[in-house]
Each structure stands twice: as C-alpha cells, then as structure tokens.
View 1 (cartoon, helix red, strand yellow):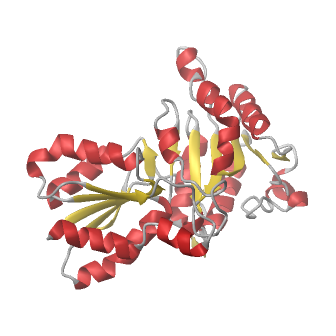
View 2 (cartoon, one colour):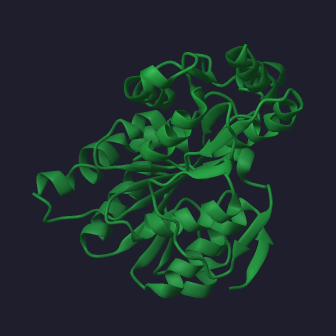
View 3 (cartoon, one colour):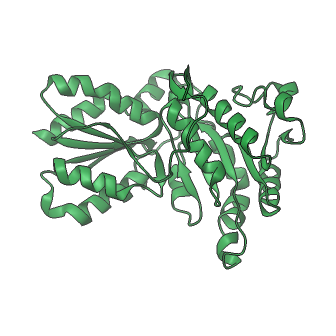
Length: 328
C-alpha cells in the first residue's frame, strides 16, 4: 500500500475522492464546494467537481438549514451525502434539522429508516476568528442520541475516520480543528477505514494517563518532552471519537497508571471531559492514586485579541504544570 505525505486538509480531499470513486452514491454539498467557486473555503473539496461532475458535487446557497435538509432527504433516498457546514458555530442555524430529524429518524421509524449523512465542519481557536467562528461544540452533539461525533488529530486519522463516517448508517459530525489542519503526516493513498469509537495510544506510559482529542491532543503531545525530563511517564490517549467514546481503552489505561487528566479545547464546564472523568471515578475509584482532573477553556466566547486567545487555549505548559501537580 502506497503512502504519501499530506496535511489533514489534503487527507480530507483524498478521503472524499476515494469514497466517491468507490461508491457513486456518495455526494458532496455545501457552500462553494465546487471548483468554479474555489473548492471550498479551505480548498478541501478542490478538484472533486471536475472529476466527479456537478451532479455529485454541488455548491449551495448560504443556508445551513437547506444544506442539512437536502442531505437528509438524499440520505433517505439511498445516497450518502457529505454536507459541509463551513464553521461549527454555523451548525446552530441547522440544529432543528440535525437534532430533531437526522438524529431521530432511525428511532422514530422503528429502525426502518437510516440517515447516513456526514457533516464536515471546521472550528478551533488560534486563528483570531473570534467568538462566532471558533467554538468546539462537540459536547452538544455528544449529548444527542443518534449522532456519532468524530474529532481526529492526524492526517491518517482524518482520512480513515472520514471514510468510516461516510460508510456509517447514522449521522456523523466530523470536526476539522484549525490547529491540526496543516501538520503533515504519512497517509495511505488508498486507505482502510478506521473504526469509529476506537481510541489510539499515542504514547505508552506508567505514571499518568492523559486523554485528549482533536487539536488539543497535539498540545498535550507538545507537553511530553518536558514531562519526560521531569521523570514522569505519560500514557497519551487520542480518543478520536468523542461519541461513542472508547471506555475500554481509557479505563484500561487509567487502571494501569492510577492517575488521569482529561484535556479538551471545548469549554471545561459541562464539557465532554466531565463525562469521561466521572466514568473513570465511578469505575476505578479504589484504584486511583489522585483525583481525576480536567482542563478546558474558560466559560467565555473565544476572544479575538491574540493575547486573550492565547490565554483561552489550554497550552502545553499548563498541561505539564497540571500533570506535575497530580504527581506531587
């Protein structure tokens, strides 16, 4: 199998091209996704309409409700639409379609209908796009029955997980986080789908488990050299899928290390980290050597000013400080 170096945006493009070549039921729709409009705001869909035609790659009006509504209709008719919502904050415009229709039609039809749609959406702090363009809202969707929430951190995972989302019979929210888009990595040109709900052990360790995902995983990874210098052995777990999350992998890791830190870019209060931390405490209370800790953003919109945005993001230094405090 031939591998090629590419960044995560290129991996998304490669995944879409592979999926469309393998299955003519796969469609792409969203604002400016066709080549005559530039192949998407980030270029992630560049070349697809030229290769597969305008019937399968459709630029839409600026209407998130229409994009998701059309995707749901196409899915019910037997297609596998990949709908691009330019920014995750804009999913709020289509929440009725996502929450009350896409997520619930399987339940409301007694399993007779499925809605195999994939919603690609971009978000993340660090680009000074401010409070209406950069929130990590995975907790909203993870709270919703019937939706899978996927948040990769590496180009290989972007491709493999997107392929799995497209093949899945249920709606998937596929989060493309700004901090992970341009970091290159080796990706198979013809990739095998990566199963949803399965975590990846980035680094094995024995003193403490750090659980993270998306761009925040990369910041946790950046903290590892300083922690190694301090003599702390960290096991780093990339959750990859926020819902359903890999309980077995996380609990096995924490059972080994006895300490856990859950870190996400989303706001800390009522975030996904609370669910993971409480599960660890419930299942492994007698084996813990320290309280489970969480790190996340403050309860604030993402600031525009660079100095405030930098303070908003959970930095590698803050991760390292928290780990050292847990080891004390």
